[in-house]
Image (cartoon, rainbow, N blue to C red; front, top):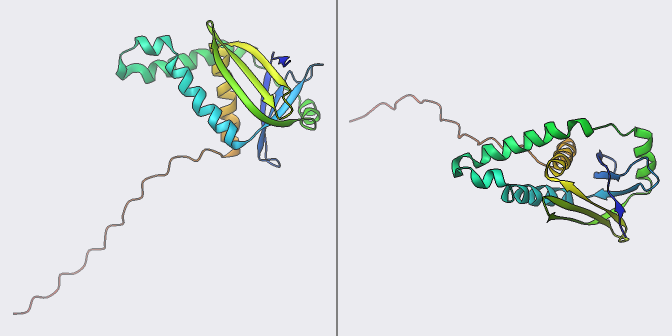
Length: 175
């Protein structure tokens, strides 16, 4: 049976080139796992799409304003959950990293007006809990920040412009 998820911390660890996911860090039922680049990017992409498609606010908005409504909803969620944020001491993270397992599955499913967030390791041990929409948005933002620290998502390349050929002197005309 998975542990009850009460809090989550993400930390990119360059030496591992993975994201440490600490569940209930510093508590007796703490558990941790490593998110690989593949899993973290897939999670971010699919969950962002899921959040967008399940947003009542976005569905009620005209098509040309849906992107703005999603951004508004995300910003409101970040503001709403700001008070619940705290810093996990580095010593706690160091100790929990030593027992981290490789993450195997991460499942997010709609559950009433919230979501069930479940994370399992290769040993089938894990953590699960119900999170509100705003909390899921916060979790995604935290993961996105660590992905950015890892440099796993490259900034879109600037379109390369073809250099204009230097102006050449007109060739003299001969008749």
